[in-house]
Length: 206
Image (tube, rainbow, N blue to C red; front, side, top):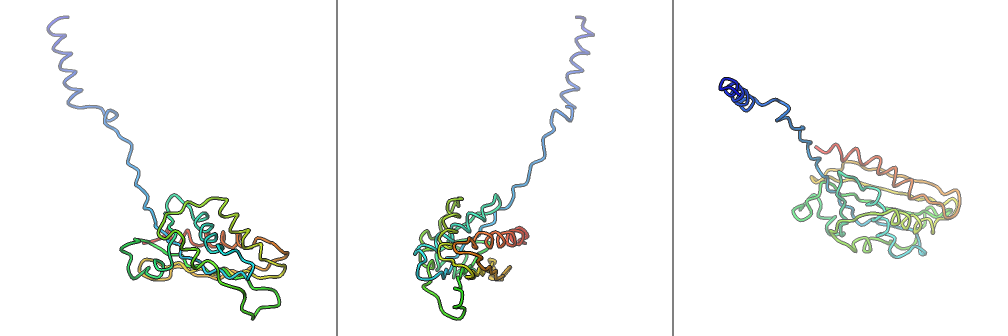
């Protein structure tokens, strides 16, 4: 190799080092990390009648958490006290929303009669402030606990309110279904309808 060739080769190498190709430095654009929305579930007030299981409220809470599982949501099961403080003192829970629900069974031909005992207000607070990982089994158990009290022509009503961190109500509705037979699962389709309505509201959080 001549001196001229060697100098030319060194010059070429120096040029590459000084001006690397775009492909040598190109990096894929960083994907933004989606914001995680923290949703608290208040203990539901569940009125099903005297034959309702004592932990019906907890099972309904867990069923709701199971349905609301989403990559952009962190679901937290609250105590009654924590839920009551939402919008007033969020320092401990740091929640974006709290979901308040009631589930009421109205017995056929007893429309104006007060039914049974309220289950779940205390049981639903069994794991205060704990993160909940819902499962299909929990959803099935909740549906079974409710449907086991249902008779033909009974009505089941699901009322919900979604409250933001500033204590403003972002969504609210009352859903009612009538059983066509004893043991019919009315809870699952109503909770699914509620979740379909709530997810877009929470995703649009300012």
